[in-house]
Image 1: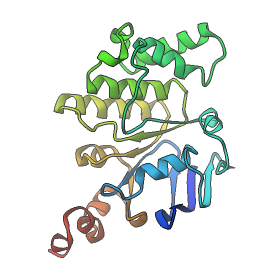
Image 2 (image 1 turned 30 degrees about the vertical axis):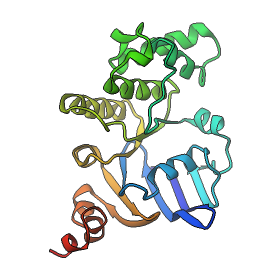
Image 3 (image 1 turned 90 degrees about the vertical axis):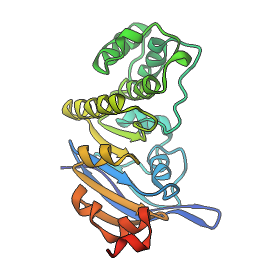
Length: 241
């Protein structure tokens, strides 16, 4: 079952096409990898999905609904949550209060928001840090808080933007475990990630872009072996060896 799809997505900034005619679809329950070199348009695609930027042309569909023109808050309420590449928690608030703030996207009362926040912190294995001020967290804990806040919006589709960047090896393994745990809960995931250990380990399918355009798609092995992907990451001399 197709849960999400983009069709002929284009985004211009002035005369530059940051995203140029990209199309893909995501099956319900899968982990879908979106890869490409720095500046290839990955985060811009997330920003278009989340309506942080308006689409120049093309369509975005979620649950068979055209959400292309939705406002950001309506995208979230429809069931799409996301993390950000640069994590910016509410630094002077506690971890718990950060998650409570996110929970108000789906509940109305403070009591409901607190219950949902505590449940989500427990699920994301951050409950032991709930009373800590967010700005004092390590980078690994901030990344986990970012995921926890997104999960508190009760998404059906979760967009993860480089949640493994800056993590040490043990934190990296823990992040992979958490992402798989989220998938096992029934949440579909689109993940942008530069760390190949993560993207190749957990993705069911991968879509690769460069200069805003699709260059390959398929299984992790198919994409990793594609000459266009090798060239984009390593240079032309490696693509034809």
